Image: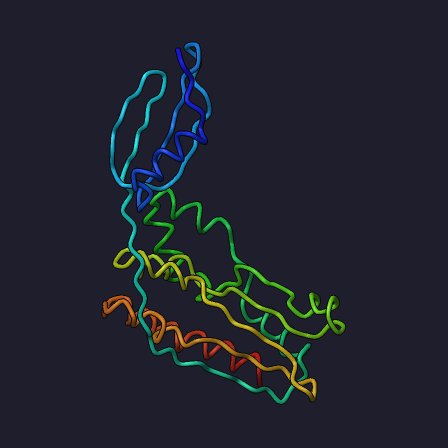
Length: 220
């Protein structure tokens, strides 16, 4: 059985004007043994030649974009960076991994207890951006925190899964030229309002208040 080279096959496809917008899988069979496939793009077509199978499957993709209005918040503390950072970590506990476990199990009783008695916010993750500046000009004081509440997040994602993009929230604290601690973050309700779902935006407003309270407490 004759074997058609990959180069010849690709050239034949290009010559026939098939390279447009789909997924193509070319499989070669030589002496009864399947050879590795090659992927490229082309319009839908199915064609079978001796020793060579050309299979083309269309894939649909769409990209959309839009501009949204986001309210940015800045809280300037009169205290030094390290004092503010320490106060923040004393105010907001680190995430309890057990919460995610009982949420995944659908444990309604424990979820209710967590909502009534657990922390309103937790620190999911901390990144030391200032330390990375050693590569540039020397270290600085700058930390990024992921802050949120897994149970609160489900109150939004049950209505709009895309809201998971902003759960948890991100807050940065850095030092200014005088060494004071500065918080910056995007106001939650302005992020979640883009989904046009009042049930989600309402939770965003709750997060506005809750996050502001803990950051102001740390900054004072």
